[in-house]
Length: 434
Ligand code: GDP
Ligand code: GDP
Image (cartoon, rainbow, N blue to C red; front, side):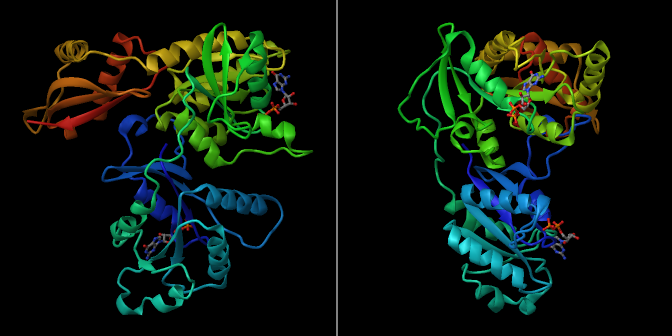
């Protein structure tokens, strides 16, 4: 589980600029899949050997307001509560603002480790109002320029050691870990209950799982699984009269922990940005995805055609994911979901020998030479498996930095096809060697 850094601050201080800088070095897997909506709020990043998740909390409105603003403030508080570290961003050019003081007061009470980043400090020299910011009582202000990059390494040199070494691990239950994701009202809780209620599932208690745990180990047809309860199904049953939604951070953690993600869509409504964001996030984390188009019961033929068209247009980057049309309410198609779960989970955990991987590389290169770059041929020498879930293949060669994306995709598709990894994300990592 990667540690989580939350970016907090007033609007316009430069949080999203800093976010982009901290999440710049992404894996190439989803770099340019057509139609993929990048999530602007959550991302993965890495500095040196240290990987982390960054959450841009958007804005912080200390004062309770109605509607969307109040909801945003609630999300921000949830993010602060669950983050391992908070970077509080303020603006060197506007100086200390009354709202900064309110946010600081909240942060001091939160008990989280907080680092104060004074942004837009480029070229300010001595004029940077350090003393004012110091008075916030959040330690030494760190002048940075998110836009130019200066000071960010110094900031992170303080932040990284404050991250927990090993974030809380999931219980050691056996079997594929299933995360059911989707926006509100698509039928996640109904599906989770249906899946756990199917075929005399035995939900058993595991050491390390508490009643509030989001991990629900269960058995079906003698096989073990773990349901990651992103929908908050069990909580919801106990919270009087309230629909308690789990926070975005819990969703992120669930995604991290999952072997297989079931993305639930509502056949009766448009596929939205939010659906695409969730799909993109699962993909970015390299999770195997199953699309479950729910509420399939009682639909007219034209409605069925309509939602299939939506799928093709709005989620074109999910081409390799199996699609199931289900009714969580009636249970139709739910048994079949397990077939995909078993298949994808097995794929994500498979191990391939270096000999087999090398043979596929040699055949792929023989069929299609890598292009010449400024008169030099890019050489791909050998491949080994670097990890599971996602299946990570490390390709060693020379001038691999210059390998065009089209060729990377060709190799990825070849591996997926030959290794029969349909539906399973395959991540190719290229390593420069002699
Ligand atoms: P957010 O609302 O906190 O996410 O702020 P943004 O990242 O959207 O930045 C707000 C504005 O500040 C934009 O116009 C940015 O270009 C600008 N900005 C961000 N970082 C810097 C910086 O380091 N220096 C300067 N001069 N401007 C910056
Ligand atoms: P969640 O917010 O994603 O957990 O969604 P819920 O499971 O609470 O379901 C939202 C609403 O959709 C409820 O009224 C459900 O009864 C309804 N619903 C869920 N699954 C189905 C389905 O397969 N068919 C139909 N017609 N309604 C469903």
